[in-house]
Image (cartoon, rainbow, N blue to C red; front, side, top):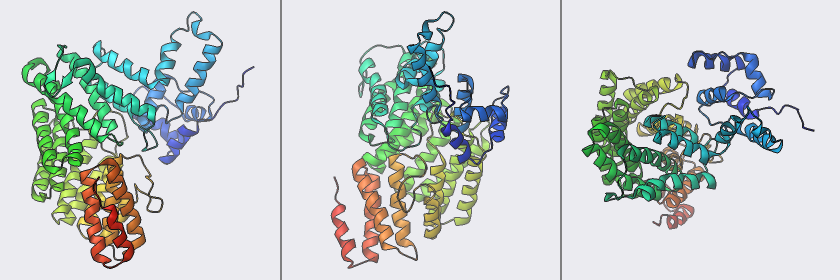
Length: 480
């Protein structure tokens, strides 16, 4: 005899409450975002109380609305239980119900879902940019910044597949494969590398992505019918290489990759990709202390945004304004910086999160970091700490929202710098930030994060000269 007592969906309810929404607000937003969707407040209540499970169609819409996976919204647990029940009672083989099998397994097994997406692309049933979006949405981690072993294993397999199957290397592809199939495998691999790089696998993601680029460049150069798509993927690969190169090779190598990203995005004609690439180039120029060049690239991006006739996703718009704000602050223009950042924040908050972007890893943590840096660079360390605290709890040093490990360490390093420059100069708190930052930098083996921490230590040592505890920390400033 089965237990028919409904099991409440606490995760779905929590997702709604975290946004301060009523059930009516959820119903209204679904109808606003997806014309033709008619949902009532009572239906949302049934979903949350477990009296009814959203159909696959509504699960997809809810995932888009809350910018979360099916697992994060509590849908998979019920699906898995249903599947086990169906198998136990042999209902899966009842005539007329065989269509349940693909749907249930597609929802519960991530590796199977990923392989189906790639198969759809190889059979030309979905476009390449749709593949990237679907994969990015499926592979995203939900509530934790820690990657579970199974997900990491899947990402590694997905990233290594083009190298093994197509023979990709620094010399190009060793096997003759249709360009369109090569692009599909590389698109999936780049997506996997992007997610790998959010954890501790920087070196692996870097090496694999570098192995893709000669083949992608070759297709862009030699295949006119695939030039646009190959150039887009090459630009996206260069975006990732620039970010990782900054950590593993230094600013000069990263600038080279970022400049290639701008070049290939311009060849592709993708306005959003051009804006993203210019923003990253500005960021890396700033890391190289070329502040005027950083501001020039940021202003160029803003000019293009104002004058482009192509539609630009609101998140790309927000990122462009944030870039202008960051480097206006870097050159001492506080008012211009705050105006640009206010515009970036308003644009971001006015956008309902969706899975429409297949690249440009941009979320609220980027805005909080940029606000903090703008305050710090214009002489307001206390306000900077308040901004950083929106992402990192200053007491527990735990993240409040999911961020990559690279970003987490960046926050901690800048919190240490802001703390040491604060009028209160809390040495204990500064040391806590700094120790977490230097340890994280060494685990990542990130040159950029290590140099940030080393700079912070020099300031700490200068301010608290002669303090034994500060002196004892010098033994941590040792390169791996």
